Image (cartoon, rainbow over the protein chains, first blue to last red):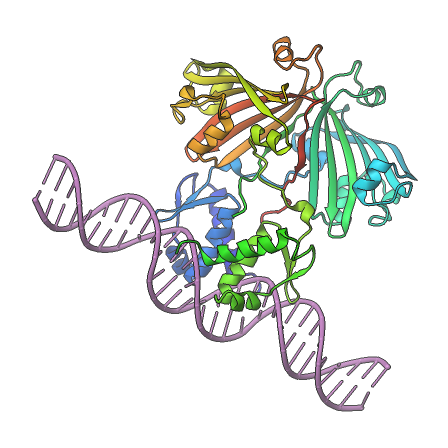
Length: 239
Length: 239
DNA sequence: CCACAAAACTTGTATATACAACCAAAATCC
DNA sequence: GGATTTTGGTTGTATATACAAGTTTTGTGG
C-alpha cells in the first residue's frame, strides 16, 4: 500500500479545512459518510477522524457529530523553531555574528546537564542573532562532543546551531526553562544595551535517542522579545 | 461497561512502569501477549499500546516490539497548573490575599482578547499568591461575564481563580506569552520588592468550547520564580 | 564456518460486524 | 399545547479476521 487509506482521508479533510470549504465549527462528514465516500470501512474512516481530533483539528461529541475546531489553536505545538526562520517569517532580515567556537573543559553544571564528566572536553559556541541589524538574542551553547563530533567544524554564519543539530541528530525531546534576569555587563555589551534591562533567558536542553545533545542559554532583551505568540500547551491528562 | 478495557490495560502498564517493574527501554508485552493476558482481542490491546505511545510513554518499532520510553520526558505536558498545587507540591505553605474583586468597564485590549465589546462590563480580580508568606505572584485577571456569570460571587481566599474556572468551564485551549518586564511601582509594592527587579510576566488566555473565558497577567519576580522546571513542548509534526 | 533462505514474531493497516452510550428531532400521548 | 416516548443518527468500545511490512531467529545448503 503506497500510502495508507486513513492518511488519504486525513489529507482530503485537511485540504477542505485549509481552503475554507469547511469553516470553523462546521460539521464534517460522519464516520459512515466518509466510509462510503472513500469506499473504506467505518473503522478506517474513524481513524482519520480520530487522529485529526487528537491533533486538535476537529472536535467530536458522541451522539452529535464531528466539527472543525477553532483555527486559533492550530499552529499550536512544534514551537521549537529556528530563530532565523522566526525572524524571516516576520518579514525581517536575519544575520548572525559568531563570537566564539571552541572546545573547553566542561564546567560542573554543564557536565551534569549533558551527562558528561567534569572537566571533560565540551564544544562551546557563542553567537549573537540580529533582526534588522538589532541584536535580538545572545546564544551560548554547550554541545556534547560524543554525539556531535563535527560540531566545531561547522560554519555558523550560514546555518544556526539549532538547525544544524536538528539535522544531524533528530530531536526526541526538548526541555525548557524560562527566567527573567538582569544581564551582566558582558551580555549587555553584545546585546547593545546601554544599561541593564529585564531579559528573558530561555534554557533549552535537547535530547536525541542516545541522551542529552546540547544545552543552550538564549538571552533576549525583554523590550525586544517575548516568548510565545501562542505557546499552546496540551491539556491532555493521562487517562 | 464501567471502565473501558483498553483503559484498564493502560492503567496496569502505567503502574508497572511507575513501580519500576518495567525499567526504561525495557521491552513490554507484545500486542498478542497483552491480548491473551487480559482476555481481549489484539485490537484492544493494541489500542492501549497505541495511546501510551502517543503520550510518549512507550515507543514502538515495527517488527521489533514496544519499549518503555525515557522517563525524563514523562511529566511533560499538562503544565497548566494551579499555583497553589505547585507550591504545595514543593512542600511549602500557600496563602493568598484578595486585593480586588469587581466589575468594571472593559478596556479595549481586554475586550478584543475576550471577544467582548469595548466598555462592556467585565469581571476583574487581583490576587497576590504567597509561598511561605513571601509574595510569589501577582495575578490580575479579567473574566468574561457571559461565560462565567458567577465569578464575582466566589470566595477566592479558598479557591484560586484558575481552579474555579477549570471546574466551571472545562478548558479546551490555553494561549500563553511570556515576557520579561520591569514592574511598575504598584506591582513592586504588592510583591514586596524594594527596588524594581526583572520579573516574568506570563499572559494566559484560556478558552472553552464557547470562546475566550479569561485573560490573566501573572507577574513573578525573576529571583523567586522561573517557568517550567520542564516545559516539554511536543515535537510532533502534523503527518 | 559462512551465506542464504525460511520461519517465527513483531507492529501496521484494513475490513466486517456487533452492541453500547448518547443526542436530537420526530412522533405520540394526554 | 406541552410533556413524554420513540426513533434514527452519531460516536464509543470491542471482537475476529486477514494480510502487509519489518526484524530477528532459526534452519539449511554449500
